[in-house]
Length: 298
Ligand SMILES: *[C@@H]1O[C@H](CO)[C@@H](O)[C@H](O)[C@H]1NC(C)=O
Ligand SMILES: *[C@@H]1O[C@H](CO)[C@@H](O)[C@H](O)[C@H]1NC(C)=O
Image (cartoon, rainbow, N blue to C red; front, side, top):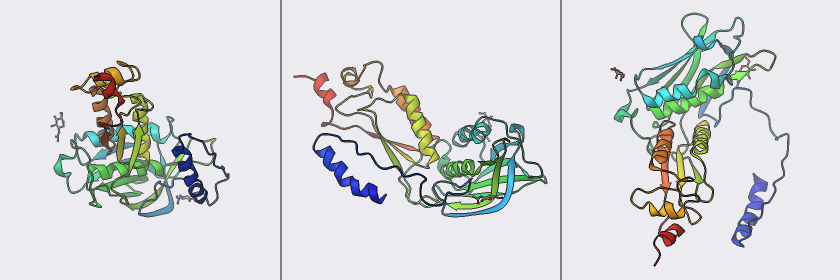
């Protein structure tokens, strides 16, 4: 980091001279410091205590999610994303003998979700409880099973808890067996910053909707919550406006093809919503909009 800061001014200088120069940074491996034990969550929760007692993953039939909120799209689609195959990289785990089997993950929204959040959009909130959650991995019932319980005040907090849960699962060091563990754990977590954004520029470089969805996935794995969509600029105008369709007709790299139609935009907003991510659109105007000059000449 210190070295990176040293070269930062140099990078700025280069870009202001108008000639972008790539400055290679030295890669030092192994990375200094002590590696975290397997099953360590990222980013580091506010409070995290992990015991040496383990549970193991059973077969897909032995594992399920449930919640106290029926018919909640945000939770139900999250259960689909964090499915058994994601935890085991698409394989069937061999349970460790004589170790409790992790039989279910229970999500409790408490008190019951306010403002019908199952159908709502996430918003910017400085309330520390807006995205907080508790996660407890402990012994369950019936005997010789374990369970994970996520408690949150909002579905958005529950999403962060599900992400942490998925990170707690780790694979046996002996790769000859396909065995997965989770340590008995007690986590109390809340984000340090209410706005955790990533800016993506689709004007200088068109990204297909599938790539945007992968970015949203990567953001949710890192608990980001704002997708800042720099959708248009001088270089291209891929956003298809219903009111001013001539802008993308003249401004898209390939009009009718490399574009974001209203349906695509709506789809991305929904994919972001169910991941607890707000979409902030950036439409520059009148500057940085060369397409206006092309579509409205004279
Ligand atoms: C989980 O438990 C195992 C042993 O049971 C231990 O080696 C490991 O360090 C623990 N993981 C964490 C993250 O504490
Ligand atoms: C859940 O949705 C189903 C089908 O739409 C409906 O029949 C049922 O009443 C809903 N349950 C609750 C508790 O809202």
